[in-house]
Length: 286
Ligand code: SAM
Image (cartoon, rainbow, N blue to C red; front, side, top):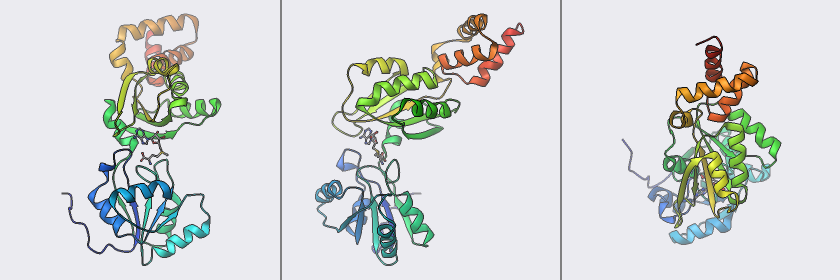
């Protein structure tokens, strides 16, 4: 059962506090109460957090914090956690998720400080819930690298995973990233979730190639999460066994079995090993 109590006198230590990703109404009552009790807020950008504090009618001392802040800044914060309430926030959403904080949490734990988290908004999780794609197993992939080779290598690492993939993206990169995903992962079902919890929230679904084409000439504005379904999700709806077998036979007419299976798996977004096994069966007359 959820525990609805908010302690009157929170223990000293590190409090990791999630903040809204768009709609300020999404700040939790416990997050607001904990911010009000803070001795210091370690913020990714104090100007951004100042707006949240103003919205809540709070005045709390802040200090800038980044994982590339120097060791002394981090050590000073860890020292303060011994007898003060130190809060970690990022500009929006859950700290540490493509945001600073990991090293501060690591060092706080290393020093034996009390560490606790106040869960709340996270764009990756919100996008999964909007997408209509399988949510039982997912991999959070953060931002893809900018350079084409590094991006293709990263996608190749993910291609065989039987999991929904979640990427953070920006408007100008969106179409190229979707096209690279179609190439590297197969043309899977996907969703582009934009401006979640804001006025123009939108979630557009389709295959990766269709979405890449849709955004090619019209890069969208705002903040974006791309959710990509697991391998095989596309084929279940887009093609039946007969279509798959026909594609395998056609590919095997011009290529060795392994290469044919790889190409067909990629085309339909299927598991490579299973497609290879099916290709072998067909080749042996199955
Ligand atoms: N820590 C944050 C979280 O918990 O979601 C993420 C920080 S990361 C630096 C920022 C990225 O998250 C954006 O570039 C975008 O991909 C995604 N994002 C943040 N807010 C969003 C929103 N309201 N709608 C869609 N995507 C969002």
